[in-house]
Image (tube, rainbow, N blue to C red; front, side):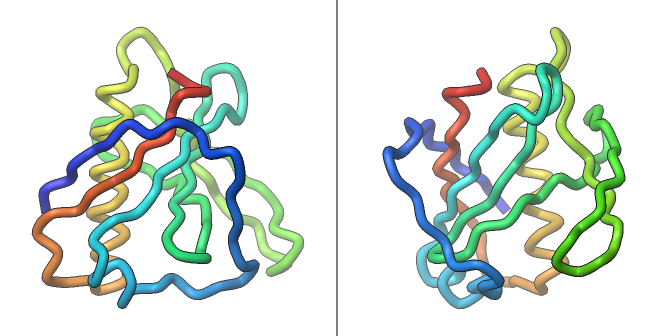
Amino acid sequence: MKVIFIDTPTPMFTSFTMFANFPIDLLKEKKTLTITARHETKTRVCTTVSIGQHSSTINWSADGIKTFEKSEHNYFSGRSDNKNYFVLSKAQGKEKYKEYVATILQTLCTNYKIDGIEELTVNLITDKVF
C-alpha cells in the first residue's frame, strides 16, 4: 500500500462521535483519512486517526522505530491499555514519524481486514509537534 502524505494545518474546529465504529466502507470509498500528532510529553507524540465521525488514538509499536510503552487505565472499559508513544529525538524526526504512520496504517488495514486499497491519502497534522 502506497501512502501519500499531505501536510495540513490544524483545523479551527473538529468533531467526532463517541464510541463510533471504525467506518471501513468510508475508508474504502474515499481512501483518505486524517492523522493528528500532538505532544503527550516533551519527547513523546500521541497519534490520532480520524475518518468521518470516528476518532481514536493509534499508539502502537512498530518495528525499527523507537516508542515508549506506557500502561494506562481506561475508565470506559475498566481495563489497562498499553500505549506506545512515538519518541522524538535527533534520530527520529518528521520523516521517521511519517514512516511510523505508514507502518501503523498497514497494521490498521491488516487488523480490520481492509483489502483493495492500493493508495491511501493521509492529511497529516503535525504543525504543533514538528
